[in-house]
Image 1 (tube, rainbow, N blue to C red):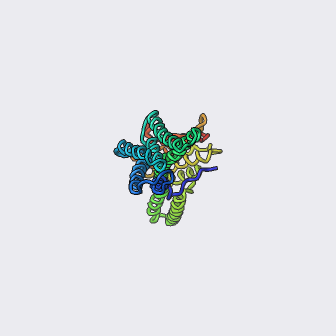
Image 2: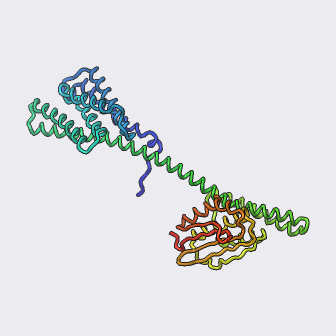
Length: 381
């Protein structure tokens, strides 16, 4: 069974149920006092003003607790609420008893420390229980009946106060959940933007380089070999269509790359650019799909960087396996643009994809040649 997430309106307005929880307790005192339900009727004006004051103070405490804080001047407001709850009860009787719930809830909410809230709550419950027991004895009840009434007062007050405290904490949790949901949504949007940006760079970088290369080659061939120029133009339009297909696939996160296809495409593209290319990639069998994807992106980005940032005359692409790890190396002799190659966002994308499958990526000059190396485990987690 999966836990359901509260509706959005509940997360946006969780304080309204908490406010509604205070209303019946606030109304109980003036109604009981005016009607004299648990004793002689009292002054209606005093009952209404007292209820408004106690309800406002308790609501202020509860809303502050729902925000995870204590309101300014809380010791004074807590003292006022306790006096308002405990003093009139001795001459107004049980009609005033509901305000003890407010006092107890505020004590549990505002006081800090292991013993202080417990001591204050015990004192408040003792006041309520004593008042009920004395009232029972004055009404000629037996001692057992008076004790039972006192116990009922303690249980009822404690349960209602726990409801107020729990309501405030629930609102706080809902606010935190809403904040976490908003943060996760922003994170997801940011990650999706990074993915689209990275995929566009990696996909269109090689496609646009190929279009520019084939376009230049076609222009040079027009005056010498019209048939070859036409073939290059037809090939150029094919690359453009593939680029359009790739862009559409990126928006749906459905683009998949093949290591064999990327290696063959890189060899063809480098050959068209006049780069002497050697391949040592015979061992491509039974590679995990995630490993093939990471290595295929590395081949694409390495080829794109070579065409855009160097004047290489030769390039070697090697794939090897050793000690349970797969290593791809792309080496070329064009180190003129190594600064641009080593710091580009494309290689950062290659490194991210390698790290996603517990691998690593290195790029730099070795013995006068530029080396791009990607190494990943055969058993990708």
